[in-house]
Image (cartoon, rainbow, N blue to C red; front, side, top):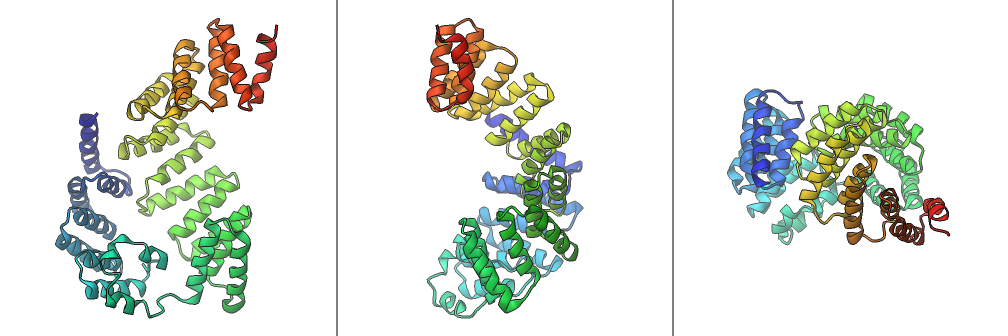
Length: 400
C-alpha cells in the first residue's frame, strides 16, 4: 500500500508538468503539506513557478517551508507573494515571525494585514495557534487595545456565530440593529443573505448574491453562499457552474471537487462526476467518502464490477468501517451475488447492529439463497429497529 501511494504522489508531480487545470497544483501541494510531505510540495510548486509566477503558489510554498522549519525560506516566499499582490503575504509573515518569537515584527505584519484587502476575521486570528507563542506578551495585549474591527464587522461576526449555532432569531435582531444604524453595504447585504439561506429563501439569496458577485467577481464567500442557495433551490446545474468558478479562481479546496461531483451526479452527467471524484482520489487516495462515492456513481452508470473494485479498495483502507461493508454488499446485492452480499452485510452488522436496512437486505439475500428461516430472523430484527418496509416480507414468508 505504501508503495502504491508513493507512486501516486510521483505520478501527480509528473502529470503536473504536462498541464493540469489551474487549481490542481495548489490542491495537490496542500494535500502534500497535510500529509507531512512538504519537500514534495516544494518540488511541485517550484515547477509551477517555472511556468507561472503567481502569488498563491508562493503562499503555498511558504506553508511547506514553514512545516519543514525553514522560516527564512518561508519569509522569502511571502515577500515574493507581496511583490506580486500587495498585502497577500502579510498574515503569513505575522504567523512566521510569531513562531520565531519576534512579537514586534509579527504585530507589524499583522497590522498590515488588518489594514489590507486580505484582512482576517478576529476569531480566526484569535484562534490561530501560531500566535500562542506571543499571546501572553505585553506587546500582544497592547496591540489589541486598539479597535481593529468596526462595529459592523463585529456584528457580522456575531451573526455568523448565531447562524452556526442555529439561533436565527438572535441573528435577525443583530441584523435589524445593524441596518438601522448603518444602512446597507455589501457586507450587510451578505449577512442578510446568510440569514435568508438559513430560512430557506433560496431564490432571494441567489438574486442578491448574483448582484453582489457582479460588483465583486470571484469573491469566495459570495460564491460559496451562492452554491449553497443553488443546491437548496434544487439547481445542481447552477451550483456546479459556481463550483467551477471557485475552482478556476484558484481556491485550494479539494472538497469543491466532491461538491461539484455530487451536482453532476444529480444532473446525470456521470462522466463529469467521475472525473471530479477521480481527481479528488488522486489528491486524497485514502479518503473513505470519495472512494464510496466513486463506487456508487460507477454502480449507477452500470459498471458494477468497477464499483466493487472501489468498494474493495475502501475496505482495505478502512476495514472497521461498517458503511464500507454496506457499500460493497449493496453492489453484490444488485449483481445477485447473494452469498457475497450476505457475508458483507454480516460484517457490517457485527460492527453496527442497529442498521435496519442492512438487516432487511441481508434477509432478502438469504431468502434468495433458499434460507427462509434465517431470512425471517433478519426481517424481524429489521422490523424491531423500526423498518416498516419489511412488513410485506414478514407477512408473505414468515407467518404460517
